[in-house]
Picture: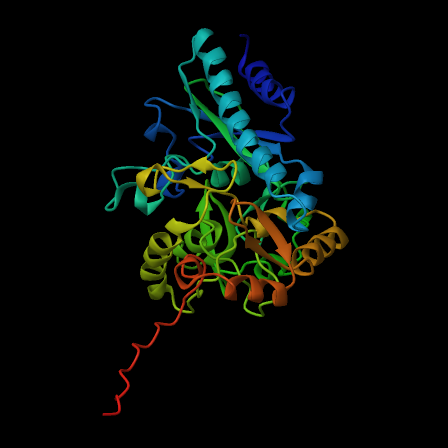
Length: 364
């Protein structure tokens, strides 16, 4: 397909003309010294390069999701965009392979290494698309650790194709140009407390240093983003989860809390739509109920604040017997839960054990 420069430009054009909002190239050299999940040869022996790209999510559906007007619209868009990103990665890999460059399309999400101590439950990706994206100039790391792009902020799905073709690397975006001003709205929008407020994670990839807020136990995200619970500490707003299980303070408390929430929530009616995740038992479906740190992070600070307001001033979510979700005031939500039978209510929140009835003495 011509020289190296021409092939590189073709690969970038290939994904951009199919809807990507940003694209770049990382190579073994520019990824050298990075974490294990930057090893391209893990998925393709002999790999030399990777084309990284970002697909934008629908902004109107994000607004309706954050304001709790419509759950299904963004959920479908998110699932569909993940599938499109995966398909585009595979499509480019197939094209390059047909032209003599064996390649591999990396799945956009939910693929984990099985050769770690706990297998897929360590949630270590085969290839870290975040690391490839920041090193190739697709975006920057925001304070949250999400990749933020020039045009769509963090509201993107990442994709990548690993190839044996020798492509020209693209430069990271200048750190001085990032729009992240550490407004901390990502932290304020996270009911689980995933991001540490003061400690940072730093890593070096290809001789360049990158950093973001240190992430605490990923079981925090499992519990909240998994949809098992989602009520903010102040009780005034929630994610799209109708669950009210306690969100622990300490990391070591999250694994048992997650196991309990998975078990107790099994009696909830099924929500329309959803998606399957390999870590969920019994082929149960999950639903997008959060992702707030990603969805509200916009290049325009005023828009970020507006989205945060939409999230926090539109009530809390309850579930009806038919499975449908609705946003109501905290007071209405409390009455809704109180009206349930103890068994039903225990599917959504921690119900105190009922005292055993005491026997009354009978007069003789």
